[in-house]
Length: 64
Image (cartoon, rainbow, N blue to C red):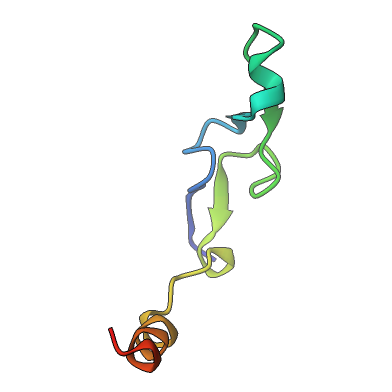
């Protein structure tokens, strides 16, 4: 199975936590990436690809 770079951590294996409560700590908070299990790569079939059709249907229903 072909692997791709993880779209969440960009191959780093770690992500920064952007949240208001973390900013009050005055330090950077990092966590392990749960999407790729900190490996930096993920199997291509596990990456969810956006499906444009449902979004277009929602817009059409709203008359946009």
